[in-house]
Image 1: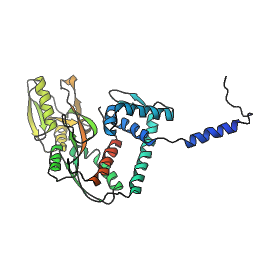
Image 2: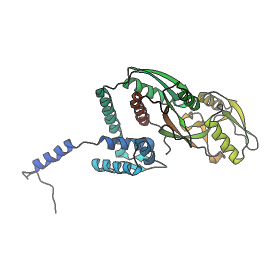
Image 3: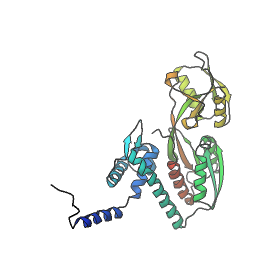
Image 4: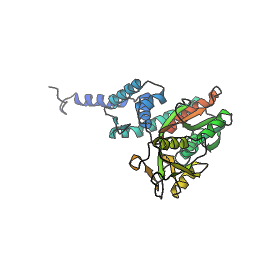
Length: 314
């Protein structure tokens, strides 16, 4: 039987000292912390492996190594995604701070601070929710960068990118498109304000963005798929217009789940509304003409947007 050393044992103090010394000399692996944060932010090992450019099995091995290092279970399967345990939540806050300080140190010590003009396009629906934090982090990390920002719909931004009017674009990506670096996934949903939903066969009044539009195409395909009649009651040029029309009770709209305002209700199968698809938000650069000096910025955007709390549906 092995017993703990007593206070009368002359070696007890030495053993305690060695234990404390071992703890002081233990270092957390930054790669393991980055994988852990990425799994939490993307909601699963599959999405994390895509962002980290690793296999899913290697990410799983890294998480196991980190759990062994801290002696705690850090992740558990939730409803459709992987979520942190209580101890995982505690580590997450420290991990974000450690990684941020590490990355800032590398950036400043490398002497590769970006400067000059950057034409950045950001999809409109991100503007009220995440754009302020994205821009704030960009400006604090790259104070000498002359940032020129354009906010618009995804397809117009990607068209501007192809025409060399923008350098970097954060926009939606839809299947089977595989371009760009994935950032996160969001779910489209039906949103309604203070209005009575007309029963079939009365056409359902909808608010649409102009064509071509993924939201519009998804809504029409879903309703035609169940044979529910609809009408284009309102057409608006931006997401804020869709929100205004829905909030006023003029029509039913299709929005990303994080764009649904508190005064709106989400309609689902219980109200006989078909399931809508999810979509990927990615960061794009012009193929074949990416300036090598912008690569650190691309990596920064991928990392920092992943650190902003978002709805992940992987």
